[in-house]
Image (cartoon, rainbow, N blue to C red; front, side):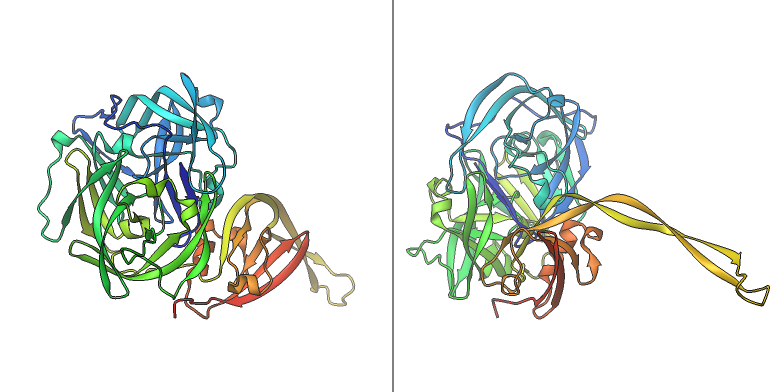
Length: 449
């Protein structure tokens, strides 16, 4: 299993699960729609190009990442209230260069998403407290769901409206859409792949890509000189994310274009992970990489696994530029801190006997304060030779303010978004390091100019 966590376009989460055994084909466990229409719409949160769905597990309300790149349902940091039962121990291994992680396979769990229910859902529970999505996304994420949901239903995702529609296949009717494109899906280990075309240094190269809605980056490619898949000279080495088996590093660059039939996206962000971290992923025959959230969000998408088909219809995000983090800073939520806030001031008038005039008064300001818990953010990764590193910032610095505004006044993603601004933008940042307050400033730098 691999779990990649980073931020916004640069910040991404890629999750793919490679089990030590093969479990191909559709499961007997099924999601059914418990209403007369046999269809239901569910609102989701779009965080860093990722879909976060409300999911109820054994009566407990949780949030799950919707990920086409996983073949099994995963649950993290399991609490006793979930009543996990019927378990057996397995081991999962993923991206990174460390050992596999222990997990418990649990049967007969009840999953509910809107009016859609599975009364006999398998899940894989991981108790490692270090595997926690919340710090990197800034909102609670308790698990991941993918193939188990997609195999039973037509899944229509409106990234523009932030709504997912789940429909029983027999009840689904395709609408006429002259501007849509339909692509065939291929499946390996219950994960969907499509054929696409990428232009690198004026050469058009056909590629096979995993569709990975659980990754917030745009495109991953596996370098292969024999096919012409290689990074240009205009690249930089970077932290790509944190995997189940450790951190993952590689090169970031741009490709001239990515084509999905008639849809062509230009100057697309691409990452080339070092081969040592993706040994499991490269075992899939003919796979050249992954297409992820920063591409998928530019379409409204219909997944039809039973007919092995995906339908794309471009939306308002289609022409957005592919941006990236120009600061070199990776942030994470690091708990909460107590902040003393002023509630207001009571103003009273009192006779000032020091003045001769009986009308003279003095104003007494009596401020009232309250203590509040506010989010705390910390630098968890720092790109070598980046503007942030060169100015003196360090991993472990707690961010207190950015451009004159208290850090806790931002949501994590709002704070990260500031690092995706135009080249030359000035960033003033105040941090706490070993209880010492330090101030730094730097300008965002475009490495692709």
